[in-house]
Image (cartoon, rainbow, N blue to C red):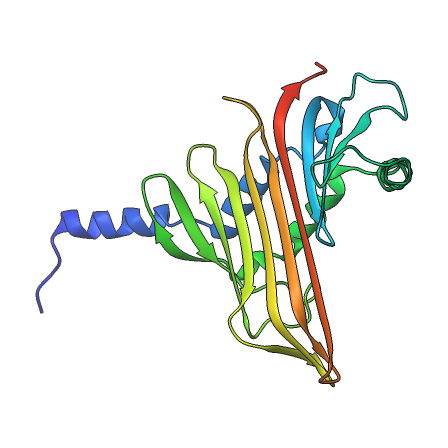
Length: 222
């Protein structure tokens, strides 16, 4: 039996020691995301919900009750009713509440799918406490090495999902994206997408789509 050259043995050992702890890597990358945008940042929010596009602007420098401004609804000036509905919706709004969507990531199941000079692509099994149907869902996260910071979380079904009697989900997609607010700025959520569609009791169809995008960030408070 031939013995491996000492240099090769050392290289293998170094590689094993250097192998990423993907749970710790994810937690570090996720911790880099600033969720409390309202604390310091002005930004534009574009929200597509129930086939209606709401575009608004948040500015923490404005007085209480005036920090959110509804700019348009489906590209036109909002009506008085839409202004009231928007104000009610934003009364207790915090972007930080969306951070609980990262609970979907089963951190103990993370494993490497691909790696290049810029990022790691990891797959995972969704946390069963957060999502009841995991067998037919492909899930992944991408982590940028220059940080590191979380770039995206993606979940989508690869076959029909049947979570209960008489229900079939044909489309299940959840996508989160992150990036710098400004050049060399903090990492912030830039978009969140949810799409679910299917049928109940064979003849009742349902579809829910929500897309939220954050843009035009401006540092407003120190």
